[in-house]
Length: 153
Image (cartoon, rainbow, N blue to C red; front, top):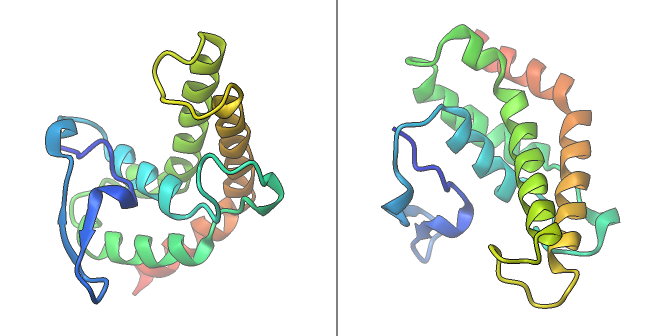
């Protein structure tokens, strides 16, 4: 069972930045582990908002990847298969790719799904997610090495 919309906006924090709970539970359903892991990193590890036009500032944050992955593996390594663990870096690239395609398809279809603030909004989002995808792909070797370090602890 996965949340299927794991982004920072769907986590409630207290005044000390401690997690209180996950919200938006209408999306909970059977799914594969990449859904929650990859989608959270897509939203949390981007240095910009997903609709920022400043593409030169879009970067995949390895500090967020490392902190999230370390905590995730402390529990999830007990039930993940070796193949799932080996492919976690690809979840970090799969979800920017999927969201890029969704934004672009909506743009081509006349912006009928995502709310837009201006005519090129979904195209800007598309380019932002492409930049995030490229940045995440460049970090795959570092992600793989970090995961192996965590498993060796």
